[in-house]
Image 1 (tube, rainbow, N blue to C red):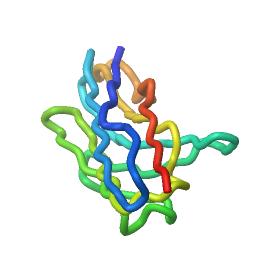
Image 2 (tube, rainbow, N blue to C red):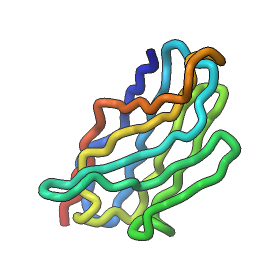
Image 3 (cartoon, rainbow, N blue to C red):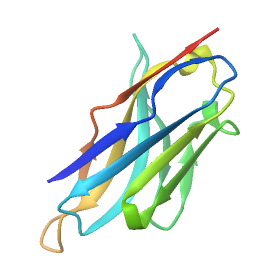
Length: 121
């Protein structure tokens, strides 16, 4: 099994910044894609950003230019630097990893418990 543990959420004023971290641990042969999803109250879950093991990155349009995703492959850790935060960024943010336990297993999706990001105006 793979466990994902997030940290870095919190309460911040609009225009401020937060940095989320997510470390994957457990039985890991390789981690393919890592990323972040978020879900705001009353809204559907939204893919915020993903990064592949080779560094290919995708963002949802609403965060482009404000958020930066990065990862440390040696530590199986993904980060999300969030700048110029807006009240509409308020959401429960979850880390995601597409990981393989060994060559005998397929790539599998794993999710963290999440961390709350609250932005007030």
